[in-house]
Image (cartoon, rainbow, N blue to C red; front, side, top):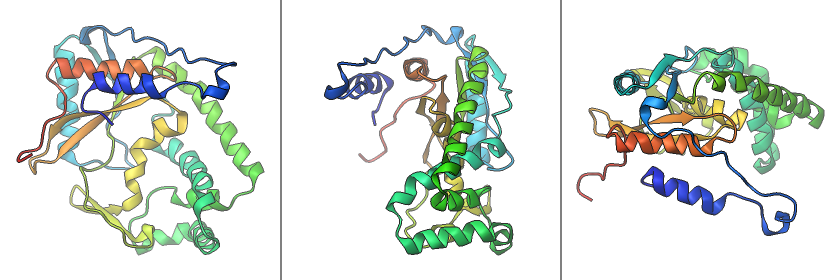
Length: 269
């Protein structure tokens, strides 16, 4: 969306806020960032989860970033919280995602999702499957009272995550398990594959690391921090407490100013 954090903050201020018809009843007043320097930052790391492995080179890059932040005076810790587990996040995420996207599906596609949900325990024997992908199929076809139960669970989780951000200002996580992949438009989606650390993984694994911020409505800024040996760029995800969008963008800007992050023009362009 932008090549640097300064432009991203400007863009946010331009597009965020009430529609003209809503201006009579509410106004947006985002909390300012309290971070002025990196040595003020309390940084939590959540870089690995057994349900969704990440390329070793990316994880190594994140660890190097954490060390560089600590060397500059930031308080860097391995984040700990009950919700920092894809086992807890993915069921609700995929269920509600299925409900959201179901409006664009044709009846035959909904029936296909119903069968995926029913056969989920056995599909893993046919190849790699993203954990809890069956909840996506159930979400596509569930009645509204079941959606309400999942939505209530999400709201409880949103309240629970506040305790994490009393301990850290930002949480750093992967964005996806790999660098950019080749476009794959084959169908059905659940038959597509990606490769992570030399092993085949399900295509939908690409959704796993964005699930936490998406499900809980947390601000997340994706910041370019390096390139792999193949020359492909990779980013770190900077996540903040609800409503602290300016904090995650400010942290990204501090990374840029310290030379730890930033857009690099591809060679030949």
